[in-house]
Length: 315
Image (cartoon, rainbow, N blue to C red):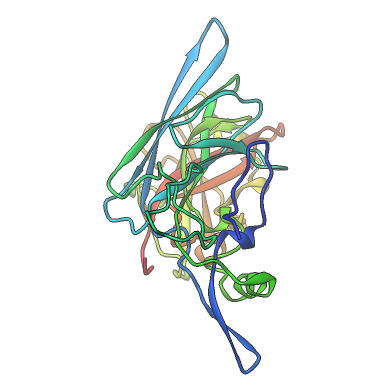
């Protein structure tokens, strides 16, 4: 089986082919050795955005850095965006593509490294020759868009070297027994925030107001997490439709009647503060940012994000 990758033009090969697995037959049961998830890494994505008045286009450029402490090399980088986009550039050894039915750009280190001399090809997925090793960074990811910048999600995945699986039964067993290492690649990725083209009004938020980002969040905490939408000279928080506000991967609703006005950052402008039950936010141990979404009363969407680090997790 071949690695599941997003082919240029949006073709997505079966996810089950992404991960190989060792398994054996014993008493008519399939024993599975789950491979590690593709998120055993710590990454930083930085962006540079410029605007050309002659073309009315923004140019978005990205650098992906892999921490020296990561256990995997970076093999994939994906990004939410608002259409349209054009004029892609890729680092050498990487190719770009688009997710079908979803506005996500994708870059993958798809140019495979050659097999070592004397090594037989057993159909296992080879590493990409340009994967980002721990302690290294890579620039050269860019595109253009007429849309202005705002906070968007990025999804970064690490390379997993596993033996090929043996037939459809193995693939089905892997999906059933190993949810932490097989399934929707976006759910398995390291998720964070960077700048990208958006259709919504970008807003500033503070998670646990007065805390310094990255804000510590314990996914197992049974209390509440306060989040403030910050008012600015150009954004009046009283225009927010409080019933539309959602927070985190699980799109949690705030506690009933928790929305209240308060100047949390002492800038003389009122902010809008909510309390969210932490257990309902859906924080995952590989999340490095949390997003808040909603609408203003006229119906226009808003979105904001802030960096976090999870505590109480085993990496």
